[in-house]
Length: 336
Ligand code: A2P
Image (cartoon, rainbow, N blue to C red; front, side, top):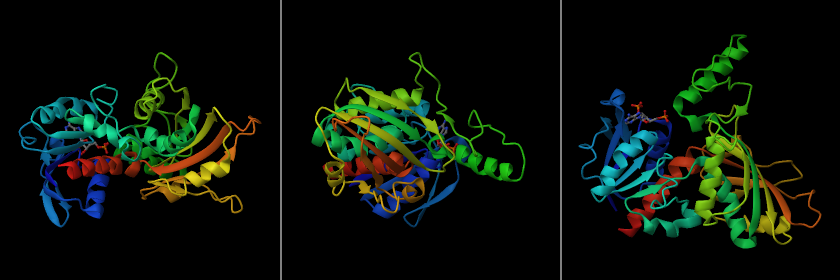
């Protein structure tokens, strides 16, 4: 039982999805508080047949909260999460603020639920791209030992928030109406285009998103030196991310062995129909909990059988954010 749950960023795209999943899964919670910026104070949102008024986030409003889920950006997390942790509550943080802090567990429950117990009041939800990647790669790594990962991503607008999704819709309309596609949220037109992920390029030539995937993957797998090469790309898709993944192994592995693994891997669904050329697609991943895994084939550049290629699609707002956070909250509730 969770005594007092606070959702910080309740009016945002992840916060709203969190509330939807809360209704569907209906975990035992005594009291829910909805918090956002002062702009949204007074807005009413119906949660489990009860109207709740959104309040401006403040230390005062967070007093007595036992579990808080933060999806309001890293600066809000940095300011308020430690206050809850110090008062004995637990924060599940969707931002990047604490992910690489050695005292903060970074958790995908299907993969490293055991790390939850090490928390000191803050548990970090990984980046959505890392979650999608590891839902496929972690079970494979556990079974066969992955030596190197190469991944290219096809990321939806939802990862950049509600205004970015609105920008995709507006630009698409404008483009079809023969008007200019004006980029205000993203740095470039997103409709009928794609571009390198919009996070800044860092000293090593990789952008922030790419470096997150590398660092978070190593932390979650407890493999601090795992070689990973990654290219993150934003595509004109509303809310499901896809990834093309190439894996190198120490020993030969067959596509049949990989397929057999996904016949029963929690949180994933095998979509791998060569005859119908039916593989994971964002259109099928949109709105569902499972990450779709398929396009499994032997890497033809490795005649020694030590390479596998695959493709995944997963809902960035569900397993990539809100669902993963609620799964962590449920494990906390179960432990109390
Ligand atoms: P608000 O709707 O009042 O601006 P998204 O990622 O979809 O853009 O959502 C961001 C979420 O973070 C929203 O709920 C937003 O509230 C919230 N937020 C933004 N800035 C702050 C802030 N300074 N304090 C608390 N919540 C904030």
